[in-house]
Image (tube, rainbow, N blue to C red; front, side, top):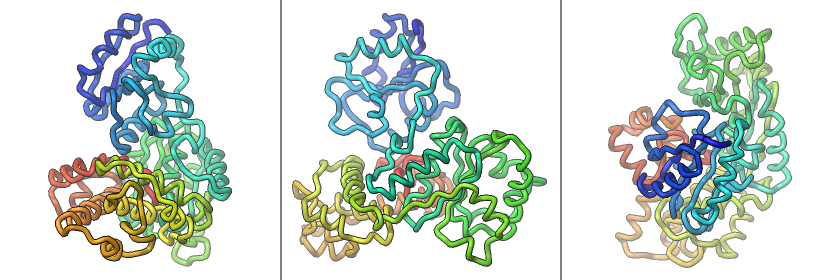
Length: 429
């Protein structure tokens, strides 16, 4: 529409986007430029403004892209690159095409601004959110996720450790009409007995999440007191409209129905919709797809060149059982990227899946200082991934868990190109 306001979120220096701002302002679309960091921290935003994510000639690391994209959920947005399109784009930029090249696509960008309407440019299916896999069991799980996402009923996600239960919950939230509301993830082992006591604290999890989604991870660790409070709260909602209060999702790797410790009434209230995520060993071909994806991601995060997987490396990915599922595959690919020096990722340098890191290092002896630095960087990156996942993305809580100062942890996160909250993705649990 004419006079459509535009917010240009610049990943580069703001003056690099000034030419784009001047061009669009001359087409009756008033523009303002906001540096990416400032835009992420700002609470207020003009919901009527179209968003342009200006990347210039580069592409930042995936965690920063995920953080910006999450904040843009429910808004009309497009990415703009100067010159040629980057060789690899996140899946969410491709379905439907959500990018323009500047200045070649100038007219197409203006046409988009001229015709943009109020319909939010939201992902249409779980596949749009980067949940990767082509195997029939995983595609069936994605199909069920698409069906469950719009529903307000409680959902229980089951699966072995490392299968991506929290990732699936976040996808269901983003596909729902609650996408613009908060997604609060709680690890049940840290939930106090009175967390769901509605007669008490007004700042508890149910109050903080309001109309969004409350995700309870490791449900089997929920204390008896908290189980009683949560069951009572769910019962109190039986006659309320679906949009009254938060939606509850939970995840577990345990057999709650067959256990004695978990309350049966709460189990049946939480398992109205049940989504089972298959283990990686039951997803033929998906380990190879995920391995290539993680190799590209960790190459960007560690500042290393992207390397293809050798045929023997791909065969090893396909042939391993992956008892730790996607999380184990993530850690293996991070180690492989850090240790690799050849044009392809090769088992002779990285060792095979399931081998210890020391065994991988001994497979190809390198200079001591080089090997030491590579090992320390790999450890630090893997440790920070686990730390931020365990703390729910809260830097203060993470620093307390790690026994270090918040400022020091912030420097480590920046050094590894990890965002403090919501940027460690795709998380697997």
